Amino acid sequence: MNLRKIMYSARILWVTAAILGVSAAVSFPAAASEPSGTIQPLTLGDSRGPGASGSGAPPVSGSAQGPGVTGGSGAQGPSIYNPSGNMLMDSTPITGQEVPMFDGGSLTMLSTQTGAQMLSVLLQSKEGGLVVVDGGWEGDADYLLQAIMARGGHVHAWLITHPDFDHAGALYNILARADSGIAIDHIYVSMTTTDWYYAVSSETAPFVDMFRQRLALQPEGMVVDTISSGYQIPVPGIQTTVLNNAFFGDASADAVNNSSVVYRIDMNGVRMIFLGDLAELAGNILIQSLSQTELKADIVQMAHHGQSGVGKAVYETIAAPVCLWPTPLWLWNNDAGSGYGSGSWKTLETRGWIQSMGVTRNYVMKDGDIILR
Ligand SMILES: [Fe+2]
Image (cartoon, rainbow, N blue to C red; front, side):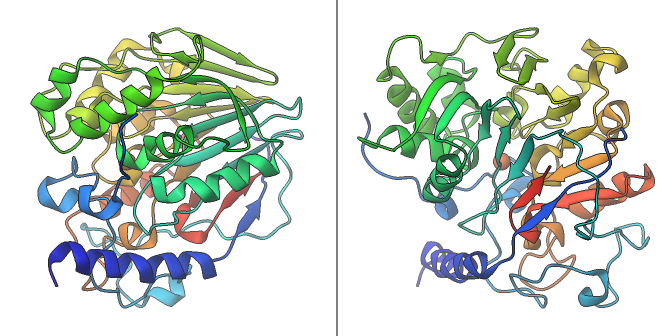
């Protein structure tokens, strides 16, 4: 059995765990993401992380904790430390007693259906507006469609941070369906030339080509691919501002991640920033380009699933009291298959940053669907 088949088998186990997983509905005080063929998540991977260890796939073998463990600090044994040896916080417990913050709206971060890292968020305002951020892999499409249907089936704005499989794969899949059962008013995306993608990532470039071709088949005016810094996207009850020009000046392994569009979204009095998979270089450009006032937010989506994304200074500038982690359990624990800390992702270091900043509300995809009201 070659590595791909092993990883695929592991995926089946993780999908089963996801099906058995829990959903967490929380709220809290308002104080303060036509070509044929399908995309195979675990063979293509989101590899613009720390070298070969940056794969978006779950580890081949199960961790000591196993999938589906919701990660109470007591359940993880004694090794809940970051590389500095400091004991780490875990995700925020759900009490059900919190005060609603969205005044009738809701934020939902969907759980992974493949076991791999991904980003899929739905925002629904009390005025009935519905925004989707990214959507996950092709393997997340059915689950996402169910969630959209449950919210009325009408997406006013679909925001793509960057055209990677684990972000745009679900939309790519849904757009191929003769009748997906939902309506999409507009899709927002920022991409550059095909040559650039082939120059920086031979892994991602073929998907970008397929995604681009599928977008070209949509009705005129539906796809908006000219967004840049300051662009406004109005939806009933939800105001989105594009905060950057997608950065295509990078030639490193993080190039596609660094091309993420950063969206600032205001809904029912709450300000959120979605960083997509932004990495260190474009993160530094972001905080050099904008004032702290423009970046201060109530909720931040952790860049690149909490591993090897932007630097700590970006989180310090945004200074959000609530962190949204699109992070499966194996990645949360930096578990490459041999237990806690066995991988080389930087999730533990990032958790240490956030902990040192005093953030006490961390909502993590590993705990199932996260619903904030
Ligand atoms: Fe990603």
